[in-house]
Length: 421
Image (cartoon, rainbow, N blue to C red; front, side, top):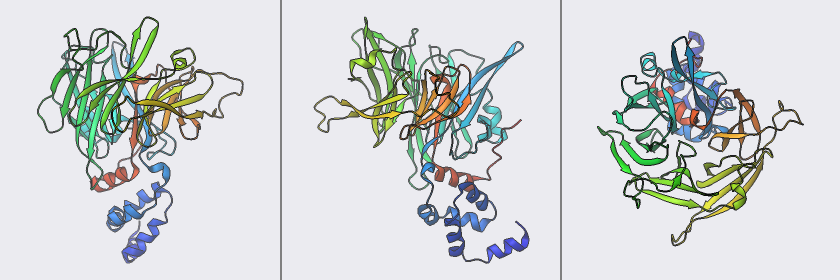
């Protein structure tokens, strides 16, 4: 902005400038205006502007994209590369990002070969590379809002952390700014058959991990779930009303049942709850593996995807208010997915769920194409193609636009959104 234009803009009263910015529709243009001069940025960061500004509906806290990592071999060596794929109408641009793009140059070096594990409220838990020991795991919590990275104390484990386990981040937001005021990290350890058996806990501000503690007091006195339990359906917990939930399956002969492992955020107490579902959903030749989600009204729900019918069933848990009876699961909605234009009308593709966040489902087809499907409308949009993609490699990211907007303007100048070469 030239000196003459800048002087003219500075001469305008604040209430006039505020009214002009209230009418700017494109949030990207609004962001550029905020970077033009100190007066404009001060006006946009004022609580009154943020409170009365009408933000687009899609800019609420919803799926903004997903992290995905892959192992790339070259010669005798290899490296782990983590990419970030924005979704349509994301707070981010449509450009292809890398994990390092969110951070300063000094922080990027620490995140080389980092593997994303789980994200919540702008925080991302990652595993750092450690070639010195197989029994020590190095973890870090990255704040994507301000570009910081805090390494956690070393975690001792006697299981293969790279292939199994469960993760959760529990946060409490700062009431004034919306940033996470503190966080808890939960790690579920597994036995040699990759079945969950213990819980490790870390709270920000503490010097060490607490645990491991047995998930359940079982009859065999070995501190693990007894019976024919399978590995966790999804390593990332679903957090609903202050409780982290993991989906797990129990088999007995040809019969099996679904349960949730639940950890209370305040007390870290653990419970196991059976999910009562119709018998027809056990026929896995017709249904993909179910996905645990938080549906409308902050209700814990179970999502079933018909393999070829492109139909979703959403089953919602209705908890008894008196607490005297077990929860009842009811079918809350049916959603028919709409084929994207790139699909041929006659083609039949098996779809598989790889993640969900904020009412947007991530699915892949037989050709490794990844799509975003809105649970409310069923609209599907192709995002990218990625070989060998699965639930363990995909970390959905939900980002609130106003919090991201304030953090980047208030903390420092935003960097280019283009990936570093």
